[in-house]
Each structure stands twice: as structure tokens, then as C-alpha cells.
Amino acid sequence: MEIEDLRKNETIILECISGSRAYGLATPTSDTDIKGVFLLPKFDFYGLNYTPQVNNSTNDIVFYELRRFIELLSVNNPNILELLSTPDEHVIYQNPVLSQLKTEDILSKLCKNTFGKFAVSQIKKAKGLKKKIVNPIAKERKIVLDFCYVNHKNGSVPVQKYLEQMKFHQSDCGLVKIPHMRNMYGLYYSANGVYKGIVQSNESNDISLSSVSVEDEQVALLYFNKDAYSIYCKDYKEYWDWVENRNEDRYENTKSHGKNYDAKNMMHTFRLLDMAIEIAQEHSVNVHRPNRDFLLAIKSGEFEYQDLLEMANKKQAEMEVAFEKSTLPDRPNLSHINQLCFDLREELYR
Image (cartoon, rainbow, N blue to C red):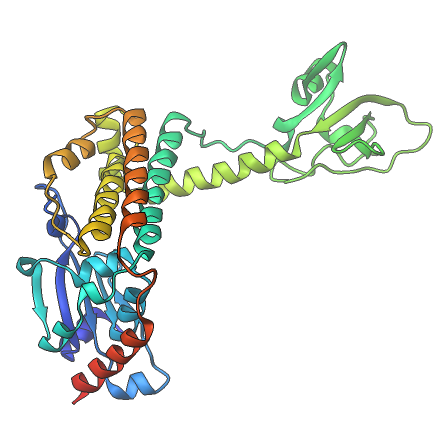
């Protein structure tokens, strides 16, 4: 099912402009995001063709089926609460039946976790980008040999340096395990091709073991830092996956302000924390943000990263206190929501 199908079949019951334009944080380069709700035809809903969500390839346009929409509301999902509370000027279409859905009937203290954890995730994303920018990983991938060392004189040297000094080729070397010594191996050498080499190839992800006779002489001890190699492989994949899939506009903006963190993520951290505090105190979801200048100043990189972290920590503490004092219920009334979901669908099908 495609978005075009929803429009063609007239199954959309709510369509709103969301994201930065709904928040009042749009700039000349901002995209227009669309979110909404659709109603599956009876045959698909009661049959085997249930479709919970339909979106375009870039996720700029997302529609949720009514059941999925209310299910997410029942767990106080931030994106869905924002959709339900979209300011009137950004509502493109709303079926009058949906007016029965009241935000105040759904809000609960779950928002402390849903909005709070979402805010923390934005900090983690900002930290992650900072780490990637400050510590880029070379495109040429390291190999197992780069994590191997041998004892030499009173210390150790990288195995490749040792092989160069000894005029050995790694393929002429053999390794055997040293009992009771993790990742430690006896290193043997023969130019007669009797050993399997330290690694089978540069693409190998582990060292290679050889059979060694009792007459063969061990020339050194080799240590393979396997843990460091595993961490490197994970970091390498994450980094180059990020390079391949990153949003170039946001990346260039991050480089341009020179603070080396994703300022847009940090902006959303403060937006979410402020909204959570308002939910606790006012029992409402205020999508349009009153502090546009402050939030856009964060986005443009006017603050130091550490200063933002300190401010965010204070804001989190304020949120904790607000929910402790709040008269919101601990959880939404699921019986009421379940009945409402049934009533809405029945009325819409009629």
C-alpha cells in the first residue's frame, strides 16, 4: 500500500504538517513533513491485510492506521501525541469524528519516560556525531596483523615491524597456542612452506594455527589483541555506514559552526524536555514552541557543547520534580482508550 492509494481511496482521516513547521522552528531550508492517520477498509482490517503504517521512501510523509495511532497514544509516544495536538493552522484535514480524541484523556506520567528518554537519545546522537567528527576512521581497513605484537628484547613490538626487522614473511610463520595464556601464541618460522602463516589472508578475522614438530624452535611469543580488533571492526562499520547514510546538509552545518556536535539533536533535546515539563504542569502538549530564538541559537551552534550538557542536566532535574508533583495519572486509562478505539472505528465505518 502506497500513500497514493490512501489519497485515491479517500481513507485519510487526519493529515497535518508536522516537524519544524509545526514547532515554529522552520527556516528557509526546512523540509515540509507530513503525518496523519488513515482508516483501513473493513475487508482489510478484519481480514489478513492489516497495514499499520504507510510512508514514503524518505519518511517525510507518514500515515498511521487508526488502531496503530491509538495504540501509540496509549503508551504516550511523543510523536503521536504531537500529531494529535497539532495547532489548527497546521491541520490540513481532520475527520470530525476524531474530535472525540482528547489529549487530556490520554496524558499520564508515562510522558516522563517517553519524552525524557527521547530527549536523552538526542544527546546520545549528538555525542555520537561529535565522536565521529573528532575521531574519523581511515577508509583503508586495518587487518588482524595490525593488532598482533611479539616480545622483543625488554618489551614488545608490532609483529609487522618485527617481521620486517627479521626479514620474515608472515606466510612462512606458524603459530601454536600457549596453554593458560589467553590470546598468546608461540611463533615459529620456516622458509620451507611448512607453516600456514599468521593469517590466511588480509581479509581474515582471526589468526591461523599450524602444526609444529617437537624439533622446531620457537622464535618469539605473539600476542593477538583480539578485543581491540573486535572493537575496531565494530567502530569501523558504524563509522562508514554513517558516512554512507548521513544527512549531508546536517553534516555540513555541523562542520560550519565548528562545535563538532549535531546541534539539531541538541535543539530537540531542549524542546522535548520543555514539552515534558509543560505536560506535567499544564496537562497539555504544546507543539508550537514559544522559545524559538533560544532553540534556533542552539541549532546554529552558538553554545558550547559542555554548556548545553549542563543546561540539559538541570532541565532533566526540573522535569523529574515536575512529574513528582504532577496530578497526572500514572498511566492512561486503557479501558477508556480501548472503548474509544472501538467507537471511533464503528462510527467511521458507518
